Image 1 (cartoon, rainbow, N blue to C red):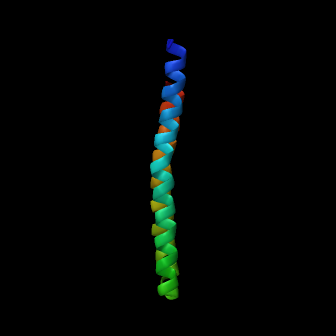
Image 2 (image 1 turned 45 degrees about the vertical axis):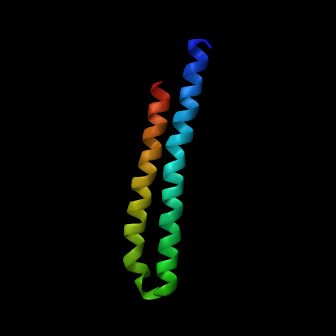
Image 3 (image 1 turned 180 degrees about the vertical axis):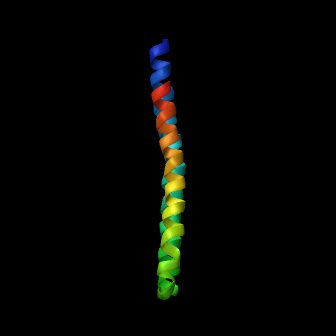
Length: 72
């Protein structure tokens, strides 16, 4: 394997592994928020902002993986 193919493989693995965790995290955040709203509909206003913040922080990890992939 030459250097170019190793770099291409590293870029692909960086995006794949770096995107898998945030995807699972965002899915679980949405799942639990909808479950909580289903149990207590009056809490929707209190849950919305923390849910969005959690999703944004999880998405930041995926963006960091994208940046690392571009720098390779």
